[in-house]
Image 1 (cartoon, rainbow, N blue to C red):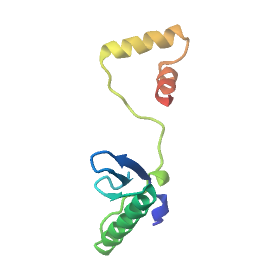
Image 2: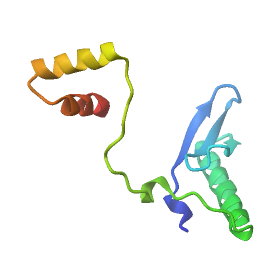
Image 3: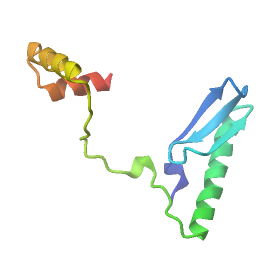
Length: 107
């Protein structure tokens, strides 16, 4: 398990007045620090500690997002009026509904 493959993020927390380090694969974990560098180092240490503990207890460790495979398909439910409007826009632009929605999501 390479801990460098996890998805780390550092952002500012106005409520705490500090930077907060986060890890997408471990949403319940965070680390507050005065600088972004210390917030990143802190969350990395917390994740390493949690992974070590999970391994020791035989728990399943989350796979890094970067190592997961994605099919490129997912379903989205929208109200019928939105579906109709998108279908009409796709027809007017002479593209498939799939291509139109893909382009909108990519923005």
